[in-house]
Length: 284
Ligand code: ATP
Image 1 (cartoon, protein in one colour):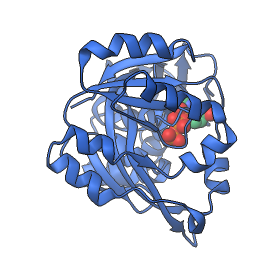
Image 2 (cartoon, helix red, strand yellow):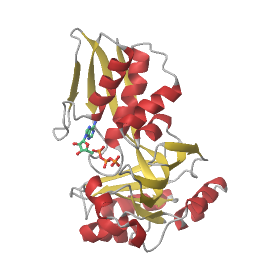
Image 3 (spheres, rainbow, N blue to C red):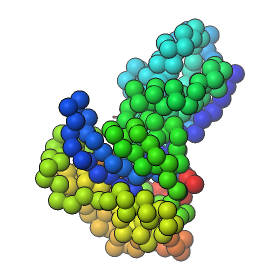
Image 4 (tube, rainbow, N blue to C red):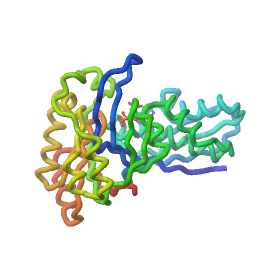
């Protein structure tokens, strides 16, 4: 049997870090939503009792470091499944970009194996497996739009943003999420975005208020380390995006655009800065 799962990228409309916890994780507040830029997973039975990962993308690990592998191993071990699986990852989401590509692949693997192996896994259990795999995985399981608290795994569903275009630009630099969090001094954050205001904007269905309340405290670290990310964000706004923000720990910058007539001009302008530019819709 062969099944397919879509693994969409996420963007953070706001991301605040409250403090570092005794367990080493940071206490965060994030508003996250999904965009229509997705990896496609093909999962099929394979004769040997092993997990095999393949991908057309030459630059991701295909062994136990791959989050899809880790998700498959977790399900296999916990449910005592004595079957093998071949997971092919057709990667479209830029890697190490702040778009949760690996987390979304892990979430899609949990959803897919639940179907492929007929496990009838309760959602609560899938979410708890997800939290073991990574802080962003539970959100990638539920999708939609959510306020995420705790270390990102405590989810409250909120209304989807008003539909718009999302211009996504990934500069050719590598940012380590660990390094960014490591350099953040939560007690020295100059200004905190407000999750309350962002949630209110979405509840009111206001595109303008959503753009006014975009904010990500990790910009303070990544933009200093990599001034080209700041330049990209400036370019996004100068070219006409209604709002722009770095997603996650970066380096990807996204711009929100309400008028379709502006999209081509912004897209073409951004291509002058970096090769990896996408114009997509929100996944609502
Ligand atoms: P986040 O926003 O959750 O921090 P990210 O978008 O910054 O994630 P990913 O694309 O998930 O980053 O990749 C982070 C690292 O994880 C990469 O360096 C990559 O080697 C590794 N990785 C493991 N599994 C995968 C996968 N399935 N797809 C992409 N990268 C993966």
